[in-house]
Image (tube, rainbow, N blue to C red):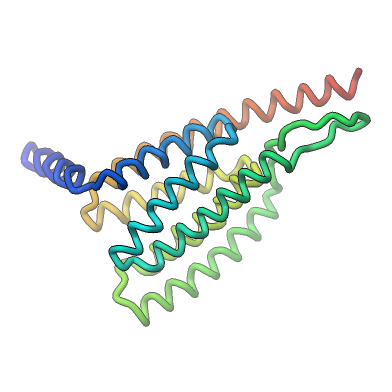
Length: 220
């Protein structure tokens, strides 16, 4: 048991020492993105943009082309998310005053459709990876990637259920990275998992406060 713990920390230290300065910056900004997103702070998108820009270059340099392209998508979503949170405001009924983009909850049926469509796409991508590449865990890798792409859009739209998706995605990713011996990255995903749980409760509290304020404004 002690030997396993020692090997774990030894592996983590080895990974940490192998990280470049740019990688460290990208990780810090990725954490900053989550913290700011939990607080519905618009500058989360700036942190996300710079973090994913760094990862785009890093992945390209080590020939992880699909990962690099995925981060290009995240960069685009960072721009879209910033624009939506800044300019996609809601009008207060009976007033010319604007409010920030509200946190919303989508119906179960809508989420079931999203899950079904994303799952089908994941299976197709997983099959293509399994039959045309040497990818490890192709179906699980495709599943987490496709759902991460979709869930990032939900964050931009301020759909509160996005945190449920991140909880599942992060849990599966932890297993995936542990299987590949990426202990440090697995530890980071454990942190992300706890942050996703906290993010849900913070968004729910803010959504309830916003609903109450809207009702009070309408009553005036």
